[in-house]
Length: 338
Ligand SMILES: NC(=O)c1ccc[n+]([C@@H]2O[C@H](COP(=O)([O-])OP(=O)(O)OC[C@H]3O[C@@H](n4cnc5c(N)ncnc54)[C@H](O)[C@@H]3O)[C@@H](O)[C@H]2O)c1
Image 1: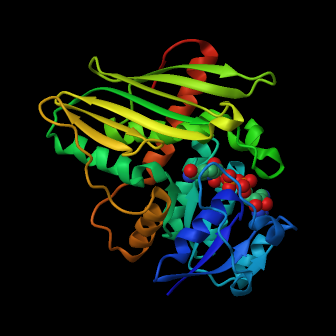
Image 2: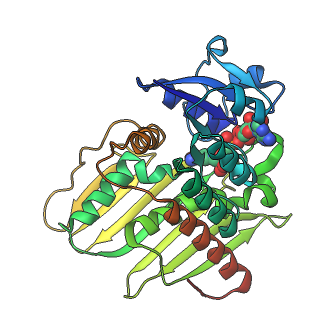
C-alpha cells in the first residue's frame, strides 16, 4: 500500500485527495497546509471544477502545518504537491531529497531555471517527479491525440483551443492574482493549452501573442498563434476575466485533412468526430477525468507499469519556456522565436 501525503490542501489539494481516495493501492495518510483554519475551510466549495469539496474524514489523516515535520514524521512514499506556484521548486526538491516521489501541480515553476533545478533533483535522488499537466490525461483530449497520431484522418491543418474562466477568487490570500507568485493567467491557466499544443505538434518555431490587461496590469486574456514549419494555423486563447456567472469552458476544434474533431466541455456529447466523408460520431473515451488518470499514471511510473510515456519533465519545462515566449511576444509586440 502506497502511503500518500497532500501538501497544500486548497482547491487542487482536495481534488488530489479525492482522486487518491479512489485508488485501491494507495492510502492518503497525511496532509500539510499552513492554513490554521484548514478543517473548517476544507469542506467549503471552491475552484472552477466540480468535485473538489466532497466530505473529508480528518480522523483518518495526520495534519501538519510544518513541512519539515510532515516530511520527517508523516512517513509518506509519495505526495501530491498543490501549493502556490512559487513554492513548487523548493518544496518538491525537499521532498525528493527526503526520499519521497512528487506529483507537483502545473505549472512546473515560474521560470526555466527553476524547472532545471527540479529536474536535476529528480535525477540525483532518483525519485519520480511528475508535473500535473492533467489535460494530456483528460479523456477527450487523450482520445483526440490518439486519433491525430493514428494518421487515419491525415495531418492537422488548423487547431483552435480555448480555456475561459470566471475570475479565480478562491486562491488563498489572493496568490493567483499576484504574478510574482503565480506567473499570472498566462502561466497559470493558458499553459494547459500551450502544453497540449506541444503534446500534439512539438515545440513551435515561434509564437505571436496578444494579451489584454486589467486595471492593475495583470493579464486577463491571451490569444497566441503558434508557428510551425508549414502553413498550418494553430491558435489558443484563454482568460480568467469572464463574468462571474459565465463559469468555466474548455474546448477545441482540430481541423484534420479528413475530419474535424470538436470538443466543448459544456456540450453533450462533448467530443465529436466529423469526418469529411461520412456521418459525425461520438467516439468512446476512457472513464474518469484528467486528475484521476494522471494520478494513476504517476503511480504507474513509480511502479514501472505504464505501457507508454505520456509526459516528461523536459516537456513540462518546455511548456514554461513557450509560455515565457508568449508573454515576451505580447510585451514586445512581435513574434518570438523558440
Ligand atoms: N490542474 C489544474 O487544473 C489546476 C487547477 C487549479 C490550480 N492548479 C494549480 O494547483 C496549485 C494550487 O492551486 P489552488 O487553486 O489549489 O490554490 P489554493 O489557494 O486553493 O490552495 C493552496 C493551498 O496551499 C496552502 N499553502 C500556502 N502556502 C503554504 C506553505 N508555505 N506551506 C503549506 N501550505 C501552504 C494554502 O493554505 C492553501 O490551502 C497551483 O500551482 C495551481 O496552478 C491546477
